[in-house]
Length: 240
Ligand code: CTP
Ligand code: CA
Image (cartoon, protein in one colour):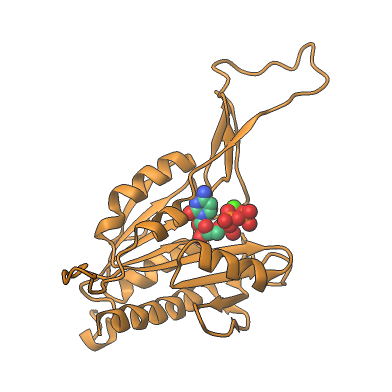
């Protein structure tokens, strides 16, 4: 059954979502990763589809099935995710980055299995990965009239996530500003019901120039709907 179009606030919009962890190879059998399961990002992709959007989901390795009706692109490393996102970002009206992207990768991936024999310690040198959200913030179209009288078409709305273990609001506010997001959804890993493998989340929503808004515990599906409704309003206001 199809819903009434008035309940499809994202109809005609392209929504790009990142989800899941990344894997950074150390050698042919080992990698660095994190505890992300992809649940929050997949919930956002599904909610955006249900609100009428054309959805592209760039997903790191997770155990979840690709959502029906969502163009799902599977990637492994942060560099792969950057390539997949940077190629598609220009087409997106609303982008939500829920992926837990590895901040570092091995400077050199060992071509053969690293052997333990003869070693008491092992040093790994890591180098930083591209920050996909910061890149998107730097390339985001505001849809404003430019000084020379021309117009930058099709405004883009950008939403990031932040996971913190302390000083949630301060650190998340810095990310909101530095990555030029229109909204940042911050969670504290220490809150009960927040974090990786749960079906719920406890978040504080940050937007530029407004007081941080702590929300009570919600199912990830309901939270996804709330986030997208707000992003639809931000998008509509940029058009106005
Ligand atoms: N992010 C990203 N690319 C990266 C790192 C992070 O796109 N290489 C995005 C995440 O998807 C999230 C946001 O940036 O939307 C914040 O991620 P987080 O790990 O909380 O913040 P960092 O800026 O990486 O800082 P730190 O891990 O040191 O707290
Ligand atoms: Ca990080």
